[in-house]
Length: 137
Image (cartoon, rainbow, N blue to C red; front, side):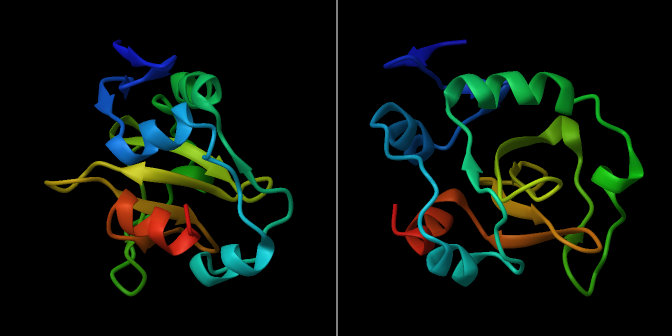
């Protein structure tokens, strides 16, 4: 794992988006106010936490072997993607208990950003740059 200013460039073999690395290394990866979060996420935040670099590394060690149906869910064409592949995703934050959001690396190109909503994972941005723009970061 190579680092930039103490921030890993990849986690569990998945390359972090450059803008996320820059936000982490500059100390700017932090939850905005609730009004901004509501424009991006389908549910209100309880206790938002945008993971720091060490937390991203730590939480994803266990995440990559996750298999519980409540977290993996099922495909849902009406609200894509519906499910997630823990081995091809990285958790990067949460809005509260069981309200995680992640980078989804399953399709070609930059990873999308997905959120664990009720009843499954929904895309909140097609890539990290769009996600960061919507959050004003």
